[in-house]
Picture (spheres, rainbow, N blue to C red):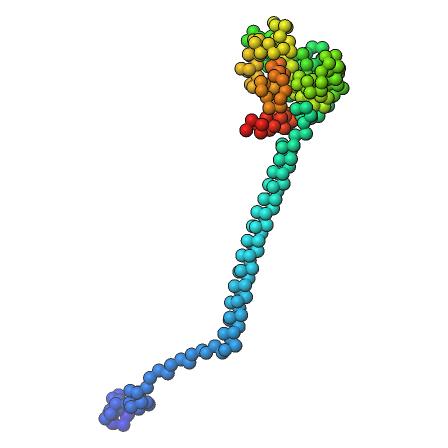
Length: 269
C-alpha cells in the first residue's frame, strides 16, 4: 500500500525536484584561472651562468681544435723546410774536386764479374743487365766489349797520378780525362768502359762515336738502364767520353749519381 491507497502506483508530486545549487549561482559561476609560475630573480641568474659556461666550453673546444690544426700545419711546414734545407745543402754544395764528384767505393763482396776471367766486375744488378745488353747487341750483329768496370781507390791512384806523371800533365789537365782517386764513377761498381770488338783502333778514342757499338748503345742502352756519363759539352766540364756508361736502374744508383744530375741541370738553366 502507498500513500494514495492504490497498490503499485508511485506517489505524485506537484513540483519537480531541483538541484542543491540555486539557479542564480549556476548562471554566474565561471572557471577560476590556473596560477602562473613565476621564476625568482636568482633563478634567472643561475640560468645565465649555465648558458655562459656552455658557451665558454664550446669556444674553448673550437680554439683547441684550431690550435691543434695550426700546430700540425706548423709541424708539417717545419719538416718540409728541414727537408728542403737538406736537399739544398746536398745539391747546391756538391763538394766536387776538379769538376768531379766524390763517390764511395763499392764493397768487394758486392760485385759480380761480367767477363770470363773475373777481371771486370759490376754490382750484381748492373752486371745482370749489362750481360743482357751484350747478348742483345750480339743478336743484332754488334760486338760490344767491356774493358773496365769497378776500380778501387788504389787503382785510381795509378790511373790518375801515374799517367799524369808519364804524360807531364797538370792536375787540371789530367782531370779533364780522368777523375782523381775517390772521385771516379768506377768506384761505385755502376760504371763501365766499352769498345767495339770490330774496331779496336777506336778504343778510348773520340772516334769510338763512329762505331756500330756506339750507335747501338745510343739506340738501346736505356732499355737496360745505362746512360752516357759524359756527353759532349757536359755541365761538369769533363772531356767527352763516348765509351763511358753508367747504370741508373735502381734507387741506389740514382741516389749515387743524383748530385751529378742536379749539377748538370742547374748549370744548364
